[in-house]
Length: 430
Image (cartoon, rainbow, N blue to C red):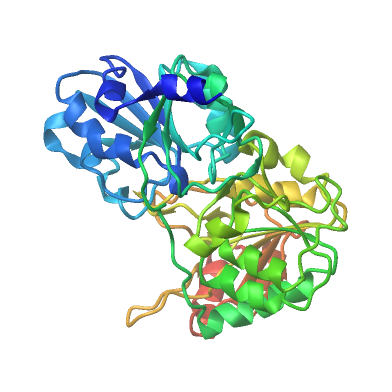
């Protein structure tokens, strides 16, 4: 096996020569992003044309994203925007692709072949396998379809269990490139976040299966759930808060229907401590998002509870979680799929947890009479279930428009309730 590995080692310069004009290149995402590729791709593409790079959650504004002289040479298709590149969306270089998370693998291979997949991995083990580490979202599936597979071998990549373990035979070339993995911090929850988390925790019973992301509210939810028992995890993203709950004994997976005893997700993104936690840890398993985020699969979990946040929502229950008006912020990701999937679980709930207002001198309500012009609807009012703010809980599923309006005004910030009511009456909502 060592001879096989050594025979596939190459330099970054030789590896880049595999990328030619007209190629479709898919890169791994988030903490698993191939840093050597992204640092070098811009210079390489100056001699090429019509190259497409598909990626997600870029941690930095690499030169290949923003160099003006790469116009017509390199197009970046991003499945989920980050603050580092969202300003480039719509400027002719970076193009967001709207799609649910479970569809990423399918759509990447649907109408155009993947000429080259470039990702990261751990050093090979004694059995001839490498681990894709933190990236199991679409990476394991694309590797099987790509014409050529390049992996940056990084000693800092943790060895994860599940679909991320692949044989060296599937890889055309390895490039040695040790680098610290991209990380994201742990924002401190606000007093409002703690109030919201307390309401959400009251809705979640012992033995429930959880999905939630990152941010102040999810971090506060970790503390609010610390005394719960036998919680399970079936989530698109494994974060530090879930690690905390596992260490505290709240997460055991004992009651889970699918993968009992396992923390199941599609990718891992957080702190170095989190990456050490998943390294060689059989309690954590990564599976493709085509499985993890399939609502039919989500709904099979015991007492599935999905908690997502949002930018704003209107009085009828339309939720925007990915833009401010016409300005793209992130992407839909798995917000819709996990919200409706949880509702298919017996006793499960889809929860949107949101602060009632924006902070600052120009504070405004996040519960609005109508969404901003251009706002993207991430969860339709037909699929909405439960909304939680620091002022309470509104269960909207099955309610008429007039009852929804009253319920949402009741949990809006008191400063904006009278105006919301006036607009609702004026337009015959109630």
